[in-house]
Structure formats: C-alpha cells, structure tokens
Length: 348
Ligand code: NAP
Ligand code: ZN
Ligand code: ZN
Image 1 (cartoon, helix red, strand yellow):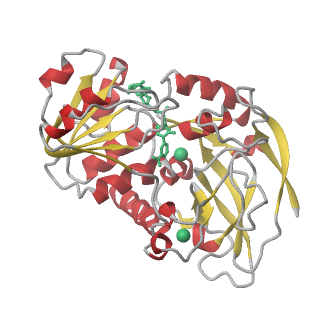
Image 2 (cartoon, rainbow, N blue to C red):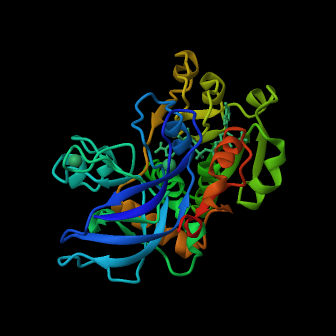
C-alpha cells in the first residue's frame, strides 16, 4: 500500500479538506498513474454535497483525471512508464454482461465501479477519485491522451468530452443538422465544440447573456437567451437534437417545444430536483426525450482521437487544490469559464 495526499469531503455541505488515502500496490494488470491534473465536474459538487442522496464519506471526488504512468504491473501490455493517460468516471465493470461485451461499460448490467463514491471489484474497498496525487487502475479502464493537446485542457474530456460526444454520435449528428445545447458550462461548451466539428449548425440556449461571445467562439452559430420567454416561441420546432446539460431544474415542456418533427432532447444534466414533462409537447410532433450517461472505454478513446484531429480541448481555469471550495460555489452560480481544473502539484 502507498499513502498519498488527497482532498476529501467528510460530510454533505462541509468544505473539502486535506486527507490521506491508501492506493493499492499494482497487480499484474494495473498501471500506477501520477496525476497531473483533475477537472472539476458538477457531478463532483452534486455528490460531495449529497444532492443525489447516495454519498459515502469520506469522499475523494474527481473523475477527469490526466496523468503519467509511473509504474506498470507485470502483465500490462497497453501502456509503458512515461505514457500520458486518462481515467474517467469508472475504473472497472463486470466485463461479462451484454453491455460490457459491446464496449458499453457505462451501462454495465451488474453495476459499474465508479472512480469514486463507489467500491472496487471486491465489492467493499471504497474507490477514491482524482483529487489526489496518484491512482492505480486496471489497464483496460485507462485511455491514452493525445500528444498534441495540453494535458490540463484534455483532462475535462474524460467526462465533459465523452458525455457530450457519445449522444452526438449515437443520434448520428451530421453536417447541417440543427443542434441546440442547453447550458454553457463544462459539458455545454464541449458539446458546442464537438457538434460544430461534426458540421452541425449549433445554437446555445443559455441563461447567461454574458456567455454569448464565448458561445460563438466555440463554434455556435446562434445564441438564445432563455430567460426571455419569447425565445421559446421564436425558436419553436427548429432542432433535430437538443443536448440538455443544465445542472439545475429546467422547464422541459418549453425546451421540448423547440424540437422539430421527430426531434429528440437528450438529458445529460442531473439536477437535484426532478423536472416534470407533459405529454402534449411530445405527441404533437412525435418528439422524444432520452438520456445518456458518459461513454464506454472504446468510445472515449475515439473521442480523444477525434478531439486530437480537430484540435478540440476544454477552456479551463487552472486552480490550486486550496481553491476547490470556492470553485464549487462559483460553479453553482454558473460562474465558470468553462471548466475548473486542479493543478495536482498543489497537493504534493
Ligand atoms: P456546469 O459546468 O456547472 O454547467 C452547467 C450549466 O447549466 C450552467 O453553467 C448553466 O449554464 C446551466 N444551468 C444551471 N442551472 C440551470 C437551470 N436551472 N436552468 C437552465 N440552465 C441551467 O456543470 P457540468 O459539469 O457541465 O454538468 C452539468 C450537469 O450534467 C450536472 O448536473 C452534472 O451532474 C451532469 N453530468 C452528467 C453526466 C452524464 O453522464 N449524464 C456526466 C457529467 C455531468 P448557462 O449559464 O449557460 O445557463
Ligand atoms: Zn463528470
Ligand atoms: Zn457489465
């Protein structure tokens, strides 16, 4: 066992504090990763504050991990010491169910082993995330990071990138499709960049007028302020796909009314409070509402290769770990441009 520095939440709503955790000695298939950067996802805030009601404490959050392999187990074949690698939202799965066999580990039928707030494959050892200096992960749940993009800007692709890439691919976005993105935060800004690179005509549906210039810079053609109720009549029946990344409760009837015939709104945001949806806006244009969670390992690697090819990475604000509680508060207020990333040097 190896003792490493970390930051943990000890109780819902209490500030995160320094903590030390044990990382296992590498087994034959494990890689030891020295973490350089870890992105801060709104899911970290939801869980550290127990907004989803299933938090286990102490909790070391962080599932947008970017680092360098420092040691490998005897049977590791995919990675060598010095490789730049990433770890996302899960560190293992059953590997046997229908979903796992198709590379859709995120939908594992026996339950995923999440990177934190979960347990290892033994069913009892708690998992701890990337707000720490080191992590040990089976090589099958690690991906290779591109060389041509800065590592701190790539870290957020491990959740925000794949969570938006996966539905855009699943719903087969192609050049000219009209795609809207609700919420210009960590996930939202990646959705805009990726959808634009797929050739879509992208609109941003935001509550913050101040984000207009950034939205256009990320590749959006249109910026729509949803605090103006008129937006929902002006832009009715327009979009093939809406990716809803809002971290807070939204009026789903209103957003659904923006879909054209056979359009789909994909929910990726996971607000604390449930939203309601009436049948009328769905039936009158054969619209659908769907959900999507992160992406599998193979697809995560494809997303990284796609981002590498198109020069896509996150717009980040690098912070030392001491600023994490302030970052959480700012995120809740929508004051993030567009992903906080922890410089893990500050934990050493
Ligand atoms: P974030 O950076 O805080 O961005 C969320 C954005 O949503 C905000 O910046 C804001 O954008 C908008 N927003 C917030 N409250 C809203 C409300 N009540 N109505 C309309 N818009 C609202 O968060 P994130 O890290 O992108 O995560 C977004 C959500 O996705 C979180 O709930 C998170 O837990 C979830 N998530 C899901 C998955 C998955 O696999 N499905 C993966 C990661 C995260 P504007 O200022 O532009 O309005
Ligand atoms: Zn996340
Ligand atoms: Zn499985």
